[in-house]
Amino acid sequence: MKIFDALIVSLAVLVFASSSAAFAQPEIGSRIDRSREGMTGFHDPLRQKSARAGLNAMMRCKAESHRARAMKTLELRYMSAEQTKSLDKIFNKVEYDDRCSLAKDIEYRISTGPTVGAFAEFFLLRKYNEKNVAALSKLTELDWQQDVMKPRNANEMFGRCLSQSGRNEVYNLVKTVPDTSAESDAIKSIVRLLGPCVTDGLEVKFDKTSLRAILAYGLFRSIHQHQEMLEARN
Image (cartoon, rainbow, N blue to C red):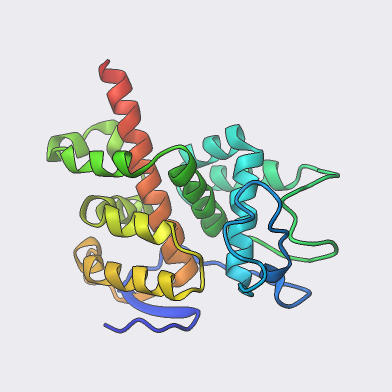
């Protein structure tokens, strides 16, 4: 199985999500002001000219600006209608001084999966850390079967599977900038782990954005639900 540095990457996995972004102007990622808070300094705007990197930084910033709503969104079933409606409440809100905007007069559209994935990345790096990732290794098969840990759809099942077998690799992916060699290397390290997480022998395609999103969400949910399980036991 080969990984290409192009935007679209073919993988032997089931398509659970799709993403797209349209811009009225080129090189949007290079227009982000590095001095802004909320993860907009996640990549170097002077060198990084990736629309994916720009949108990823913008979505992380949105998660920081709307922490409570972003967390509630992540607690909903992945790619569900309820999750999409929750995102609408964030993005349909009029903000006259939106520090997360890429630039003025830019048209863009977002998809639920990539946006939720970026929200998950924000909390994985700001709320949780390597210790929370490592703690998943101590869970027994019985722990994973607890109601609080059970996936609610095929998307979450796939994400949970990678959280069990490749949590460190997924966390390393989350720490990379989209459309960089570091991201490509991180994805390559995950490819070998995908096979066992695909059921029924289905062969389809994933683009980098969708794969990154579903893995980030899967790791976030595993850690978040694990914390809830620990709190319930205390």
